[in-house]
Length: 262
Image (cartoon, rainbow, N blue to C red; front, side, top):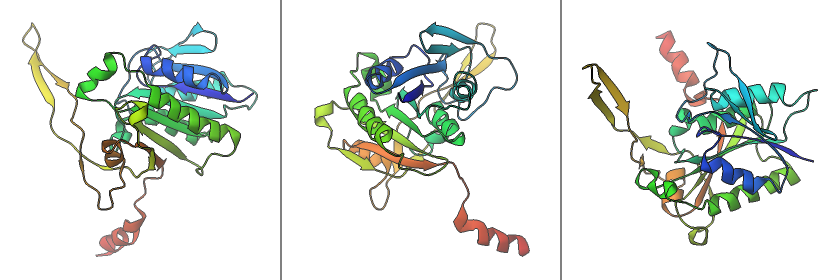
């Protein structure tokens, strides 16, 4: 029987991961290893300065104290899957909130998929885009479109081959609409995210200053050909972006060589 490792960055008891488990349980044997608490925007970070404790929550269901999604994937594939065996697939999500454009570099959801493909395991990161600071999700969102989408993708992967080469994963974003309103799926590129300043300065009762980083609105630079992830979501399409871990700017290698010579 095929095996899927599930994780996230919203925490082991988040609504999104529960819906993901429901969607994929009919398709394969599921093992869940997730952070004990929310670790959103932790990026591709690995914990090296303290020990991590894996706690059994239920059958094949674990949380790791103060772990990142990267920790969860790294620890589980090297300890829960023994004798050289690895999961057939890692699925990270369903994240609450978008992971598009350069936000992929912040995302703990995407980072779990990055860690999986570093170990040669196919991976998908899936996120549910939301409106109004995710109040729609907090008020009982059904995740129906997200579940239908991930089920379709996983069936194809388990029945055949993963469509990408080494060190590449699928980044999936679901528009904040009901399933019947969806216009289909678009294969997209990561868009150009515009960032603002949403930092709030406060003082605690002792008069000490502290800062709280808020949520940036989803603003992006329009692409010339209209094929970026932000535009697909805006137009009520599911966005699937093939992402690679190689960050080299190949077009600039010669120009940097020439710059150094001068």
